[in-house]
Length: 288
Image 1 (spheres, one colour):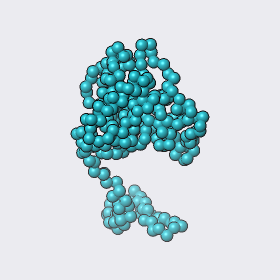
Image 2 (cartoon, rainbow, N blue to C red):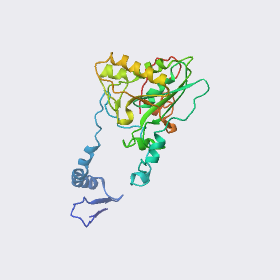
Image 3 (cartoon, one colour):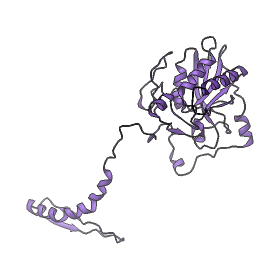
Image 4 (tube, helix red, strand yellow):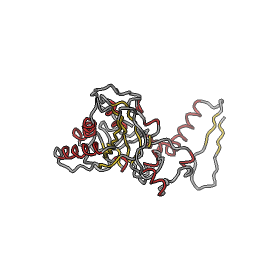
């Protein structure tokens, strides 16, 4: 038996009636009722289904990153506007951050710092260099003491994404590290980077834009400074655009969050581990 329940509402928006069909309703009656009511229900509800159409997916690499694990998950309080600290750019904080790197390399080893865009791929490139004994990614050259990834992404702290390389000068020269640095990125793009290979093949610029992705060589000794300046001059003669790489003394190094360390070697977001074997020439796929 059919029971028709007309729903009521306090708004003026019309609503379709709800139908309850009992088990005793005959097939013919149900059929006639469906012919009467389904068209109106379709008009009421089916237009909204057009929003569910799948969007076309381009077969070509996109110049933006629709999803990235580089953005740390925000908790509910952050989404509601609570819990996110404003960077403390006080004079005291800045003086600490602008101080020298006081960490000490292992006996017989030396440090070098490089900024060449997203530090994931840059780190992997240095991990493969014979004579490099350790790499770490982090933040330096900024005005905030103990910055987080979220802090530097505000664009207000002036930090750069850095790879600090520890190497054995008996097995690896500083000039070798400089060659890896130049080959890994385009030093003529200001505050945005991609691998030099992608720039040459696709004419592409980096997905990552911001002062934290700037090109920089940060030296620990006068010998490193001299080698860096000579290398830059040599590199400039090979390019038809002005190099924007900054050359500055190495400053306090803040180790990045653990999930950033050896990111590509550990598999990245897709779990595809990339080789850190010394001398490996496999293409570096920097995905986030």
